[in-house]
Image (tube, rainbow, N blue to C red):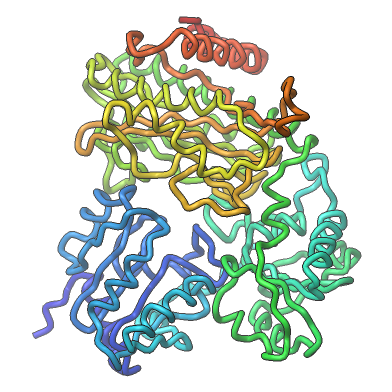
Length: 603
């Protein structure tokens, strides 16, 4: 009798059937799509479909006897709950970029065995590492089959929503200018052709936006450029006729999405193709003819879009003020409602905060699913309340809210922690140490070109002093009406690379945290922009950069343990609150204005 009644167990067994039929001994299912996106269209959410684990990062490996999910500390508690009873083991990794699953595969298989992964969603850099590591053990890597397809009968198709243009005045750089800058970089690299496969790069470069990925205004497509023209490989009927005409005027023609590989195979033998090995899949790389010379370096568009222009910065500041006003309206409503004894759940926070953002000028949608975590749920960095699982906000403690919006003039991401009832001395201590980390990094000055991971320890130092730490990075790049996570910069424990150099115009989050599993969590996040500053020694020691804090929303002072704060830290906080008050006061009125004035009173 077949007792495999749970959906997850049944799906894993169906995948094992496909695995055996293909004479394969293990299959890797990464969190990936043909564009190596962080957030995936439903068609490529195979890891989630198979395992039931809903986190945004992780890898699943299934052998004929065992199954294991690999996830970092942001997801451990979540994964343990979601994997319970599935038969899938949780393997805890040290970071989101960990490749510990390679060693696990090697330990499970023997020489002569075959491991499989769909090469169409496998990054080129990871493919090289997999082949080298498994090959050293005598294990063959099979990349020409999608075993998931055989197990997933009702697999979703490609998303079909139409794309639209990001237009002036918020689109401050024309498509033609962006293409010219990328082609100039191609010329410096000696390339005649360039494949752009990451969806945010394609969207930025063509001044187009879409809705193929939840909370990210992007669309599924590849772009192949040469010195004069380009082909956009995209789904049928996704580009309106008027948009297609304007693309054509800039030399961009349309082609079926499935023909990208064939176009690469048809490149002339004397072509030189520029690709980014971290932003292109093995499947596309293997489509390139052997006679074509390949240059591997970072996409020029990745570097260009990370450096917001002065004109874009004007709209970003306006967007931050609109978003801050929405936060004031929400928090005034929230606190007044609690004072009247009304009940709120985490779901209510999400719904009513989103409703306030919808009222603001230029709002398009959320930049990620709102994280509203009451007490123990706040200790889960990527928690999301669901209709089937959420908490009521009641009693005493801390409420963590991490949220953001997509606006025509920018992308926001902010985390605040609010006291409900009486806050304990331990909670105040944790809150204050995290705040000290946020302030320490926010005040930092550094030479232009500093590799962003070198700044990570500055935010951690106040926590390290007390033997504390957090498992996620301190800061990620943020797009311009684009993905809320973008590179190349990363303020984290990542191994520094040249492309991570800090340059003027880059927008990055600063978000240290501290998490007490089962108790509470603290994270205080602002977005900052790199700006050049004048120093007396500029000529001798080079250009210096500082952070302009963009996010405009009070940081609650009721949770602060004043004994842990220095005078200069209090001065920074008072200056910040003076700016928040000055910038937001014209945008709010009534109860929201009263709340703003109260929450920005100097210490």
